[in-house]
Length: 109
Image (cartoon, rainbow, N blue to C red):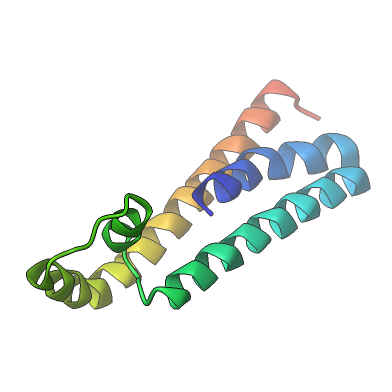
């Protein structure tokens, strides 16, 4: 999801600015592909009852977290989740605004 959101944030405005409707179509395709892979990751997380990156990386590496680490991860998740969402949205908006400023600076009307 992170790479797809980064791509959309970086290319969204320039594609619309230069290619109008075709640019919007490309951004929609980027969003659909990003959403597809996000749902696949969420299905994987649901299948293995995992929520944090540490839990997911342990599965991928073929390791398991011990009982104390599992309890720590479950205790941290409710506090980390809202922060992760806020930071992700903030970074997305900052990248999008930076993209807009760069395009407007380099190609004024």
